[in-house]
Structure formats: structure tokens, C-alpha cells
Image (cartoon, rainbow, N blue to C red; front, side, top):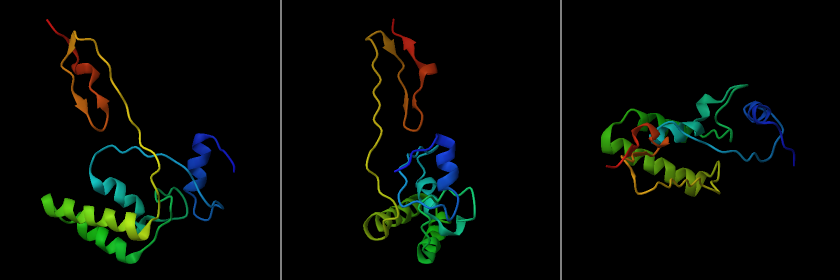
Length: 131
């Protein structure tokens, strides 16, 4: 087992052909759009360097389904991405989740205007003192 500095680690695992059997990394996404997560398994995005598909998962049939889901909108789009997620988790398994981040925010009874944003957390600028 080898440990690397943060940037060196990601430079190495994003380089195609780098010799590793397993890389343990975390992920944070800017939106709650399922495409942001699922596109990281798009085999068409694999190149020699700077890959975000760290598993190097390359399944042409999955890629076609992913492209088709991206063209949909509304409920049909979310259902298509849900089916793709299930297929990845149950049948293809290019990655495995083993932990999740949980945060807690504690405020006194005087603090109000609490707005929690699922992607970025508590909106500190919105907080106010109750009168």
C-alpha cells in the first residue's frame, strides 16, 4: 500500500496505465443532478491523462444508454438515470461506496433563518438572530 500527497494521488489515478489495483478516493459534486455522478463512468471520456473516470470503466452499451438519458428531460430523465444507477450498482460494479459524509449544524435557540442547501450545506449568510 502506498500513500501519496493529494495532488500526486489524483495525477496518478487519472493517468491511463498507471499501475494500481485499488484507489480509495472521495467525491463531492457541485449539483444533485445524477448525470454528474454517472458521467464519471462514461468510457468515451477515457484519454491518456486527466481522466475523471478513475475506474476506467468502458462499456459501450452503457455509454449509449448514458447518452440517451442525457437527451431526456423531466421525470423520464430521472427514471433513465435511476435505471442506469441500478445497473451500475447491481450488475457492472465499476466502483463501490463504503462511506458517506454526515454533517451536523448546532445553533442556539436565538438563531433563526436556517436554510440548508443539500450541495453546499448551511447558508451562513442567511442566518439571523430571532427577536
